[in-house]
Length: 244
Ligand SMILES: Nc1ncnc2c1ncn2[C@@H]1O[C@H](COP(=O)(O)OP(=O)(O)O)[C@@H](O)[C@H]1O
Ligand SMILES: [Mg+2]
Image (cartoon, rainbow, N blue to C red):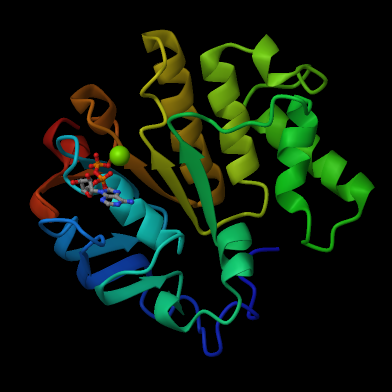
């Protein structure tokens, strides 16, 4: 799974050693007064956990949406895990298998069980129903939710729901996990839990994690903090190195 060669015409992943590389990325929404992104150059190494922070409206979500190929840039280039997003052959496969998305509001389907919410991410991957179920169980165990498979999302705490969303995002072993304010609605105990899951995923699977947050204490758990303002990157910080 993942790393499909079907996604782009010529995709030799790993050539640059970078999981994410954007150059001169701009996005101007139709009818907007100014750009939402204004020349973003961002390089993220494989396996890195990077926090992207900055005030509301500075372009954080726009950046993640472009990386997920949910929207197209006005100009500039994006390469994710060796795939040039301007030349995607199969955008659906890219979204399903190369990137995993976790949002502030987890977007779980309320009528489905926890297990089914994870299984659904693997539809269209060629796995059998039994294989999907087995893998969903394994993923849920990996976010400490073994035993919760039959519950509905409404029967879980906010932090547990967010961990289901993380399990779902990891279902197809994405190269890059994109999380947009995933702790924004959680109490502090749940925030800690969710952050530990991101750290674990990175350590165990080498997944690259981009974590958008406007909470400085959440950002401080990353290896690197990228600060944005008005659609631009205005600062970089390495909290881990500053406080070993
Ligand atoms: N779909 C859209 N259409 C028009 N303007 C948008 C759209 N999405 C975001 N914007 C604008 O782009 C800017 C950046 O927004 P966003 O990326 O959501 O910022 P953040 O996630 O940092 O709060 C804001 O000025 C916002 O109003
Ligand atoms: Mg946002």
